Length: 156
Image 1 (spheres, one colour):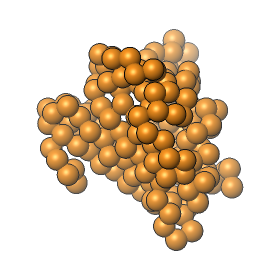
Image 2: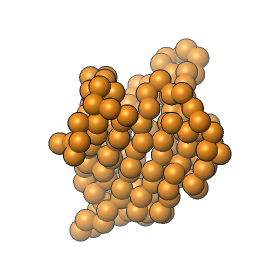
Image 3: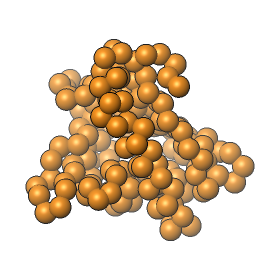
Image 4: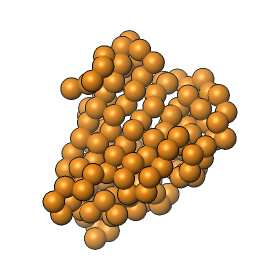
């Protein structure tokens, strides 16, 4: 349940330590395998994990052309613990006009022998949050997390 009407949240337990979940997030070729729900293909253009670093992915269905997916900027990085990115800025703190303005706070919290992976997604207002939710936030991000869990199972 969101803390505010402008937020969406999702969390899952992943049966792998935070270091392994972080590796799947922080390695471009790994991120491309799980970031977008299958069968859509992901291409990682930029994954510069530092404040001000670019985060850009593209997606395609079938044999079509790759289309924009995320073009953002990392705001904060704490390896194996947290990363924060926004689509309101692009690499180098450049202002952007995204199709969906958001800031995502991703946390990797140790839980037993695994990781509690959580995403808190902030939107400009309740209407944008509702739009994102109506687009399938829970299913889309949930599928991505499930794919991440399956992928780290193969990395172990």
